[in-house]
Picture 1 (cartoon, rainbow, N blue to C red):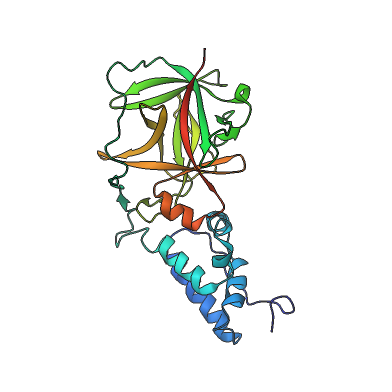
Picture 2 (cartoon, helix red, strand yellow):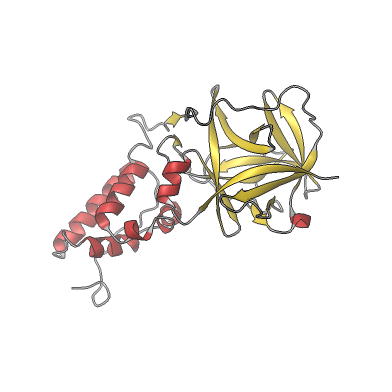
Length: 280
């Protein structure tokens, strides 16, 4: 029996709401495969499972490498890695800030004498393409995206908040700041995480984020400006901070807490770094 010729068993969509739903989904796929005599057919099980992904889980599945999408045993392992550590026994989100590696530390951050009134644009440089001319853009109706036209880029004024640099948007439809907004409700912000966030505009009046479809937490984007002009984005919580790495696909920019794990899970996206370019 093949999926193409016969109606597959019916299952509830898997939306990626948490480990309890994921556990039920995996067991349901196994049960359906056993009923159809396909329990050892990794391609059949992967194809059948692909019909059930929805919402956030569908976004996650679409970014997986092809060999994982087409092999149930690899896909099941990816599902377990993605959702099993999301919650502890009390259902609370694990926050495990990544410790800087020896290669990444110490970071030389501009502190003394920094001009807090600098204005410019945030340039996004894809790894291996030093001449890439991509810039952060957005009109306040959704998450920020990328443009290759500097005239369409967000005009940004850098400012200070405690030890961090923040980005005020100049000339937006409303007075706003650049924020970081997690796509999923309960992101795992730490090592081994496949979760991602995106830059958004945060209204300074009502503190609403422009990334309206996102369900996770958000805060103002907090940056370190390095002496070579590179910009490092940070997520700050309870005195801890986690560095976020950039990834580009098309005109979409995502930032992730564990670039190695995210790149492994989403092999089609290209790693990127950020530069602040002053404007006259």
